[in-house]
Length: 215
Image (cartoon, rainbow, N blue to C red):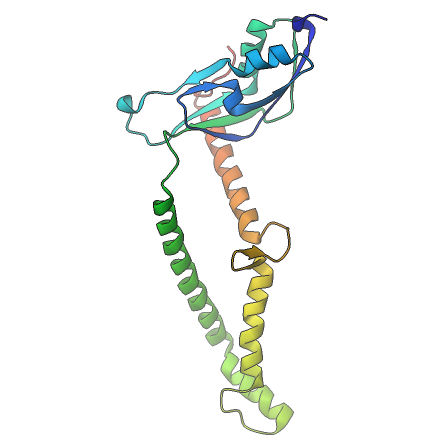
C-alpha cells in the first residue's frame, strides 16, 4: 500500500496555545498512521504564520480554523490519503510569545484569594443576618436545655466547625491537596466558562467570515 492510500488519524483540541508564530501541525495536532515516515513529514508541515510582535500591539493573537482546512493541507501532499478527524470540527489557535512570568501569576493568585476570602465571609455573614441565626440558636438552645444561651455554646462552635468542613468537602480541597480525585466545582465551572468563550470566538468568526476554511 502506498503512502497515498494510508489512513491518517488527526486530533485537535478546541483551543491550542502556541509560542512560535510559525505554526506546524505538530504544534496543534496529534497525528498517527501506520506509515511513520508520512507522519513525520506531516508534523513538519506549516499551518499558519502569525504577525511578528513589531507589526501588532496584541499580546495574544487568535485565529479560528476549520478542520476542513487542515484536511485540505494534508491532501495537497497526499491526495489519495484518507483523513479521519478524531477531534474538534472548529478550533482556535492562540499565539503568545512567551508564558506569563511566575511572579506575576503568584501576585494575581494572592489578590484573587484575598477577594474570594472577604467576599465569601461577607456572604456568609449576610446570610446569617438575614435568617437571624443568632436568635435561632438562642431559642433552640433554651428549648433543649432550659438554659439561656450566652452566645457561645455548643451550637455556635459546632456550626463554625461544620461550616468549615462543609466548605472543604464541597470544594474538594484541603490546602494544596484534593480530598478526592474528582474535579472541584470551581474547575468544572472554569472549564464550562472556557468552552463558552471558545465557542463564542468560533461562532463570531464563522458569522463574520473570518474563519480560515476551505474555499
